Image 1 (cartoon, rainbow, N blue to C red):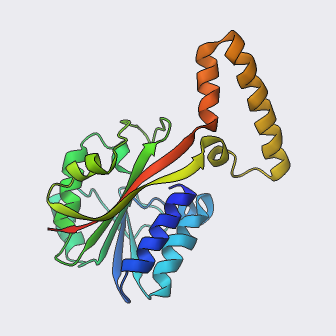
Image 2 (tube, helix red, strand yellow; image 1 turned 135 degrees about the vertical axis):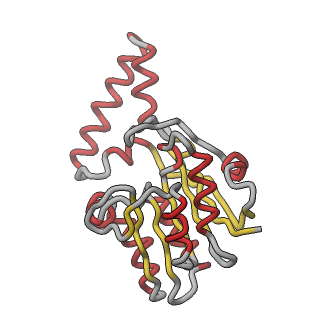
Length: 220
């Protein structure tokens, strides 16, 4: 999840989450990922839910610290187990692009929903190839994402600008290190523009904006 993307989630949580709700976070990854690798997930999602006394249950296919339910979301028995939780919210962020059978997974998410459940989805829109362990390069706009959930109604959605890829990839650096990296990358890009067009395009991509498609749905 990108930082600006997490701010969109924060806004949605503030607007739609009801007190004491149960939230299923599907494809959650680990406690370390949420609190250390991308700590803004905890701040902008988990802490916002906590303010409303909501309970968040993390779901992943791998057993790890911080995962509450381990299983395959497309497995019928696991679908039923999650549906019985009667969640008010289901979150699924940056997972659809890593699936070989996206259709079955999206159908499973709908089956887990109840009459009052809202599903919050995010996927990359403009973002480089990234394996986890694969990347199908699924990069839908809002209309294309809606096609993955034909039985759901869009409540609201947005393609969220998340700044440049350079800012994202150097967010762990201090200011001086980031400036040095920016200078080196700029010089390399200028040289490559003269000597190697393919390399120039690859380097120039660091200064292009990245974005995510974010949407919240409910049952029709």
